[in-house]
Amino acid sequence: MLPSKSLINHYSPPLFSSKTPNTNTRITAFPFSHSPKPRSLSIKNSANESNSLSPKPGQFRVDILSESLPFIQKFRGKTIVVKYGGAAMKSQALQASVVNDLVLLACVGLRPVLVHGGGPEINLWLKRLNIEAVFRDGLRVTDSQTMEIVSMVLVGKVNKHLVSLINKAGAIAVGLSGMDGQLLTARPTPNSAQLGFVGEVARVDPAVLKPHIENGHIPVVTSVAADESGQPYNINADTVAGELAAALGAEKLILLTDVAGILEDREDPSSLVKEINIREVKKMIENEKVSGGMIPKVNCCVRSLAQGCRTASIIDGRLPHSLLLEILTDEGAGTMITG
Image (tube, rainbow, N blue to C red; front, side):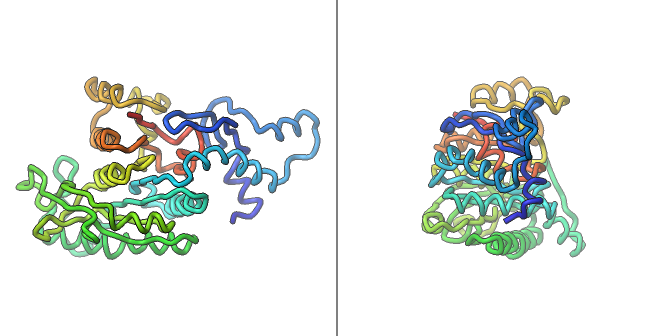
């Protein structure tokens, strides 16, 4: 638990709505929001008006927990699939933030599932072994030698490191690859002649995950899977997260990214689209307002929603505690896509 002084540094007074949150809508602001005119907590207003003593740190903690109650009640017992990558994976501070958020969510009754890639770590080991990293259309060209490194790094190193961090933070994590329990069955991409062992998800069997989720464990899944013959494939982690969210009937799919979310104007960071439905986001793609690397992320979310996931969010993983912002506040930390 953070000491009193640290808590104030991390949390400004909460600004939640007292209404019970609707899963598909957002409510009001939160201490982490960037609203230009945030409302202050009532106790703070009272203190300012009367020029009396400032609220004690303990009062802030109590108020934060109290105002979180409607969100906790709404999501308690619900499965949340989080794709972890980008800046949040490269920064130790952000990595600790994500791990602590996952453990907190598990402690209050949510059922998080973490899916990860590990591109930067793969590149590091390829460089150490004097193997050139080659990309085509944003996808890693994966020959047999590279695939061996990908498996070793993602399954043997990154996955177990994340499991260790979560266990150390107070939860119980279980590390899995797509090959474990035939969780994922892969197939080659249509352009496998150019990309090598880069795969797609052919089938999901979440049976191996469900006992862990029901027992309160946090599954940590890496995006390596094998085809029917046992050949391993490197699969995009966003895709894996989306397919798992659909198969589990998850309440939310959350993709941690290095951008604020979907922007109405790509050149204007302040034009963040807070909430959008499938029809509207497809129109944005048609009008080229969504382009480049954001397109596969949006398509991943749309596909997951179409198969049973309730909502999908593309959030800014560069923000500390972005997961808590997205789940326990109405303001969120990016763009929420609804069906």
